[in-house]
Image (cartoon, rainbow, N blue to C red; front, side, top):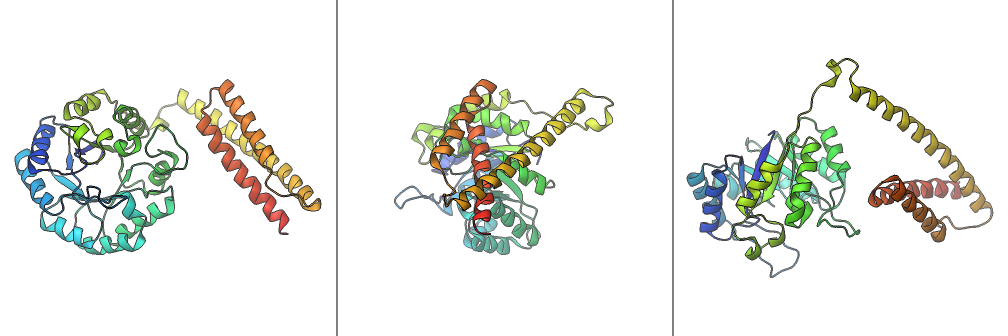
Length: 344
């Protein structure tokens, strides 16, 4: 699945829209798989929930006229049955489905014995074990799943619709190196102007492809109108991307990259040593709090640490988001250390 581009409308709306978009995309000679949602899980009733099974007939027609294989989202065993009946080439599991192990198992059971590829989007929330569990269920069913990174919900408001949290898909690539990782920049971005940046970042992280939503008239789309690109804009974006290769540097003697990596290894060792020393002091503070009947959480002190960290981040040219995540992790670990002391 290296360098796979999946594209098409968020939702199938009419047969004319589905077919004409597919024909247009096929003319680019860059699209490997056509996508369109026909069953749309929506947050509230009354929202557009897709055209249903009739959309599969439209996609079959689009395939005949464009030559592009197609994929749809399935959210239960009945969807799988209909998709297979209409010769769907690939199915994908949406973020809202991945969170439910019962439904994932139902879909895996329905697909067992077939050789249809299945792509599994990350769950809505940043729970890597849920994502891992979904992958493992399909593997046990005899399938070879791929993964789709579409970002995660977060209480923090940033420029993205869903936070990339790149460390999670990177860890999934480490756990499952044999399976492809596709990025869905449309759902991460939520806005057209951010899709190029997210796409390039994913490629630089050695992702295997992209799933980008495309619509002939995005502003009037029935779903996710702000994140869909016109086909010609998609082509421009794809032409702007740089696809890098992962090279085996071990065969290159005395290369500069290896020297720089060794410097990082040394710095990491120093950081870990200093973190260990920090936690020793945290333990002493925890003992002091226990002996003097003081609560573990000291909000003003925490705010002071965070302020100092953010001030330092600006002078060191580190992102505020990174510093917040770093201090959050350190703070949680510190609280766990002191909580253990309190309960000894």
